[in-house]
Image (cartoon, rainbow, N blue to C red; front, side, top):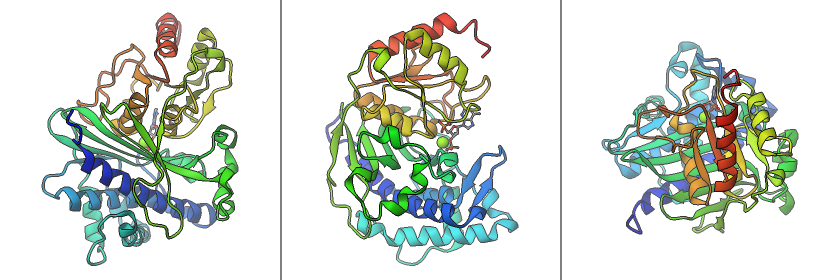
Length: 381
Ligand SMILES: Nc1ncnc2c1ncn2[C@@H]1O[C@H](COP(=O)(O)O)[C@@H](OP(=O)(O)O)[C@H]1O
Ligand SMILES: [Mg+2]
């Protein structure tokens, strides 16, 4: 790959993820302290909040202004259906306010603000513009505005995930993790304590600092981490960027394995069986969202496994950014049959064999994929 290819796209993507992480932090704080009405249910009963739509609108607006509204293709999780209903008028006006408040801050992040405040229809258009279905041809931005919405509404872990797919391959991955503790002891702190963290971190003692953006470019063999910027500070590149790398732990007894919090999203008893077979002795670390990929990419955990129920189709926005980050930081990600994930076939990871296995190194990965072969037939999946 040419050395500077995708540099502009990566630079804008990192900046916009920083910008919307600050939006998310504000909304999460409000949500926890006051306003349960900001949470809606989608048709599949999963929650969606003012932040999901606002992040999508902001990212869509910035990318469209930077790369051209006519030519850009964005695949993203949210649509305007629920937001456009008459009973959602209050929510819609909150989204419009949140978007404008956030875009006013864009220059602090080196991005352009709109000349005039965006009206309701412009905000709805920005959200609605993200209806691309991806595929093997051309470039597609892939956005999960809030991955792990359940974690977000519970005051816990969530992520903003932005990736660029070019000719079916993920070429850029950016993950904003606003509640990721910057010190290695995040594993101890990952639970409900986040509910009180926003208040306590105002004083910002270093052991409590949290929030980062991870980013990488395909083929660079490098992944980077920047801290979130706080208060009225400007984002000044390279913003204390540090190289991150996967863990070198190869002994299963010392490895930490992550999986979804929700049993509905991944079969915990099947992964417990695999863990037992390969000799993982620590308790699984159950964390919401793509923060699991972030933990592996920066060496805080070694394994992520997800085995959804039969018939569930994984979506590209739930994996694209995280998979590239783990790979470029030195790790291995495949489906449970050991095949690479295919991001070229539309919004779903079509052809995915059973589940996803992400590891910090080849040896752990081989053991786990081998264990899936050995135990699949006796499982009920
Ligand atoms: N039945 C199911 N099985 C597997 N994954 C599911 C699921 N229902 C929803 N998901 C996906 O799992 C994501 C959360 O991941 P995790 O469980 O690892 O925290 C959700 O992302 P959103 O929160 O963006 O909707 C959603 O895309
Ligand atoms: Mg998601």
